[in-house]
Length: 262
Figure 1 (cartoon, one colour):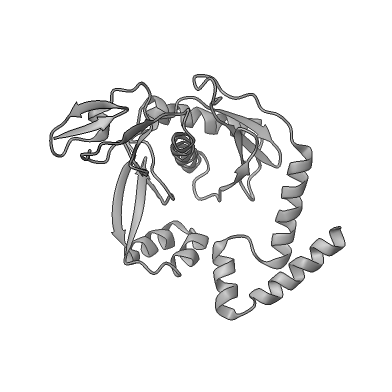
Figure 2 (cartoon, rainbow, N blue to C red):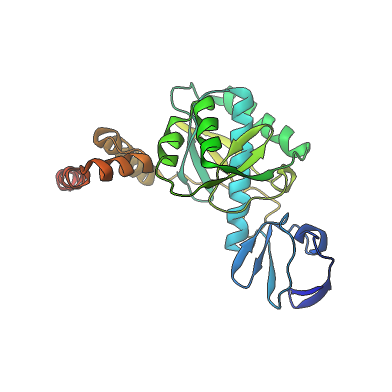
């Protein structure tokens, strides 16, 4: 069997994975005729395959998702059972909160140390497909009620999980085959949470320098307070508003808050 990768013909055997035939340095995934595939997916014949690296937008998304999973696995070791909210981008970093947890430099350093350990061990990230009932049972056991409520509205019989260090999680998109792929990062205390700094797109071997965005954080903080007042902090809340026919009221109150702010 053969395929064209980055304009070069490559011969492969049936069942071989993309990671086994891609020769590009530091690959993160492949783009096959417009569709993204993980490196541990079986290779297919195609005349148009592009290897995704950190210089590609979709490659950066794969890196970011994988690093988020490493962060969650590290938190599961350091503060098991505690809630983690991956909030939003912050320049070339991600702002993260740990509600009801005292976030300080000591905690940030402990989490980063565990992340380094997971990356250095190059722990595998496995992909699995389960039934909706099995997924519901898992989220019930680990106490992730938001995801349990969200899954209630998912009208598909199967559910896709990724697993790392005994922890299962759901992501919209592909991840790297193992934690060793995401070895460039840094955690930084940024109250009321922390920043997970990503590689510099122009120099992927180095961590991006962080900038302060006080006005942006003020806007996000105000939005968070409004969401708390309105009882709408995640997609499950919106689904329940739609089901109970209270979404119009939510919009009206939100518009009034905006009017007063202006």
